[in-house]
Amino acid sequence: MPPTVSIVITMALVFYSVGVWSERIAGRLKPWHLVFFLLGLVCDTVGTGMMFAFVGGLTFDVHGVTGMLAIILMLVHAVWAAVVLVRKDERWITRFHRFSIFVWVVWLVPYLSPMFLAIARR
Image (tube, rainbow, N blue to C red; front, top):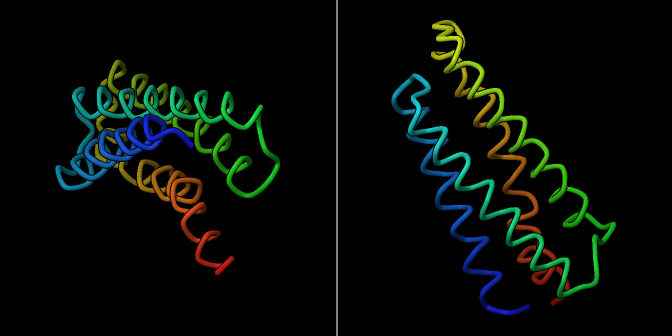
């Protein structure tokens, strides 16, 4: 795997983590959190596209399937965050972090799975 892929995917981890955990700590969803969700989504999508080009498409293993699930959840997460912010729904603004944490944890599975699979092979 080219090192560029690792850099882009790690940028996705940093952006998404900053957005999710700062939202959690603040206790309310803010527009700049959405910006970080979107930056994470863009980096993850670009990095995944680079991986697809390298391996010849989607692999139907734990990494490939959970990776696609994570991108779909990240997209749903960003769209829902935008809707909540536009509607100024105070109830969801203060509870949104629950969904954010769930999506972040799901996202970690494809991020960490190559490392765990490499360890298991040894």
